[in-house]
Amino acid sequence: MSKKDKTKSGNFRPVYADATENLRLLCRELNLPVEDALPRLQSIAEELSQSETHRGSDKSAPARKNDLQRVATQARRLWNTINSLDTDDSRVLNRLFRGSSVRITLDPPDPLREAFKPSLALTGKDQVYLLGDVLLTLEELANQVGKRVEGPQKGGRPQTKATAAMRIYEIARFAHHYAIPVGRNNRFIRLCQAVFHAADLNIDPEPGVKEFAGWMPDLEPVWAAEAEADNDQVSGQNPP
Image (tube, rainbow, N blue to C red; front, side, top):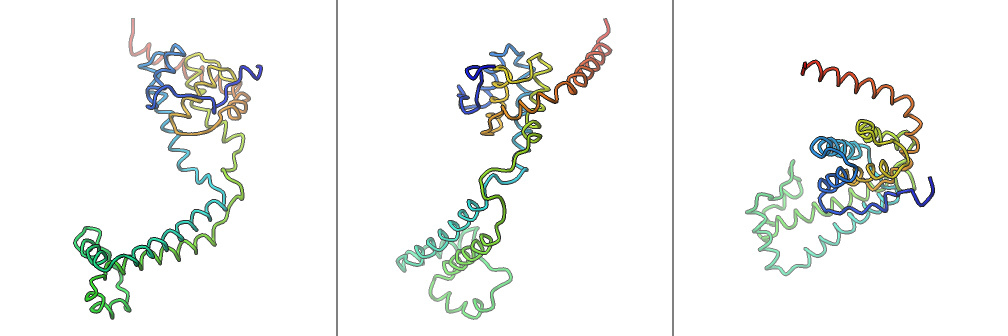
């Protein structure tokens, strides 16, 4: 296959904002029965999305540390901003906090705060000061977590060839069912791209497709046997 024939995931341009409509359009382009094929593709995309969610973080250790540092910095800045509010505004904010369903409490109570509680109540800022405690504690904890972060120094999860191919498995099984050749051809690559897009995965399918092609000689007989068994079952339920 020439370079001109290759389709990259980055070139995929969804026609519709809704992923379902893009899959529906793809079914029509590939001459697939929409009512049967569309629910299957939606199910595959949903399973892919869920499996990727549970696989872990894409971010490198430096990026994670940077995020935690931003949390610490923003927590401190927010408290400094709140602490600089006009006294009347602080008291109004405090009163609204006390009357809201998100009233701030400490459990267990802080002994030092309990000792000064009457004085803090007189200022009319006890909830605002508690908010300050939360923000400053968040700053400290984010800094602590940032110091303990370990992991790859470059972005992205380490991806093995098998991992890339496993993303293709159910799509390939679907394609085989509808007699779409599984391999580095435009029809199958486009099918993979559309499903990945529906699963919100910004991944080039070609590495997985290339690896998966080596699995097909072993899988095709198994899938063919499964399809034959399914047909026999249907025939048994609907005798002539």
